[in-house]
Length: 283
Image 1 (cartoon, rainbow, N blue to C red):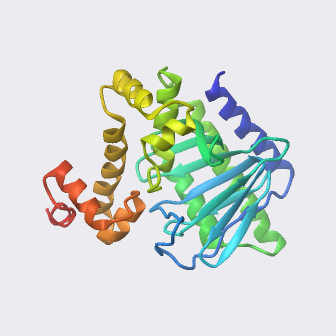
Image 2: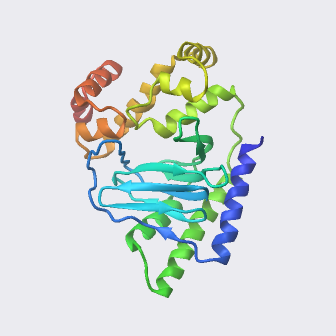
């Protein structure tokens, strides 16, 4: 299947709905920022969820939000959240847009056999126009839950601009090189769930209906890197970026990157970079 075209088609459908209707755009309140809550995660960036099938129930520190099919949810940076997914007509699906500092990621997420969201396909876009999506997102977050008609029209316009800009950038993007389907799914899952401390080789193998030994062997054969090392590389690369560019505490960075124990995070980080997290930040 041409997943790149599927993603574009899904965005085209969402754009048509936005043009015709007053799509619900939900912005949760920014209460409890940076709280380290069990089974919740938070990021240093916003996340935009377009619910294309089924329903997602989001749990935040002070409220719960149901995201129905055809609605948009924008999770502000640093807001802890957890997700429960529900199928409708036996299907669950979201498109998630993630505006990082230097790139955009857009992915289609569906239900894995473990009952959790997992990336079906993703594309990363690096373009000077990325800033526009971050600007639209910031404006929507600052506006919050608009109530009067004129403000709702502003929300609709900004939401339409955000999705249409993402669609335009994807049309200009480079083709994703082909690779083994299991390896691609592993990489997608790690990129989307590295911040979950429960992510490990055994969980990935269960998701792909194979043994941990086989998955580790396959991943190493295809990439030249062990799967455990790949997971740690993704987490530690993110940690290094946060140490350089944010004022998060060491404990907060460990939490964001999927390490429940800050002391263990410090040992792993020191082994990779030959500096402790504190020394790395100071240098």
